[in-house]
Image (cartoon, rainbow, N blue to C red):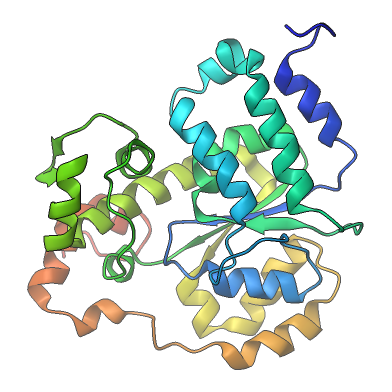
Length: 287
């Protein structure tokens, strides 16, 4: 306990309580979240001062890395262990959102960052009225978009929840992953998709009415109705203007891009990720 008799996390949550509730966009990388972020931002939401070309909030990434490396996936230590006394974490939270919102004084804000998925319990604690958008894309398409090899402990957790794996399901982790991923990234990408989407859906279910799933394929093929559904969910201030501005940039070319690859490679991904592909309706049980 701190000198004030409250935990470090309680103190920082109280310090953030005057902020309006944010909108949080999360997903497995390469799932179309940039399109979703552009829609939300165009509708009148402020998504941060420091974004990369994919609209990821780089300030929030500092918080994600710290929490994932030290606490994920065992969040009991965050609430009942050293996390409640972690003054470094409390200061980091304050600094991250101060920098993220510097110069902003409006009512509509949030951020987009793929790996926010892995710290959703903490975000929900800090912002108990936040709303969440989880964009999901066919894992077969995502598998053909390369990302970061699981060499560092942080990325090992993002892929598998475990930071000390060396070999699992035929894939190498740690320093050997640099070689393995370079030679054959396909199944690594499938594993990354399975872990991220599974976790996002499970955490999302616990958020109940404050959580909305968005299919990338639906957003591309039926943009205007899907965009209005999303913007209504977050009470966006300028729905129709945002739909009109973003719609000309939307196209269906990336949907089903796995079909442009060899059947053997697609079969490998389907075999690896089959249960989740079936559960989400991307694959029939007989395939």
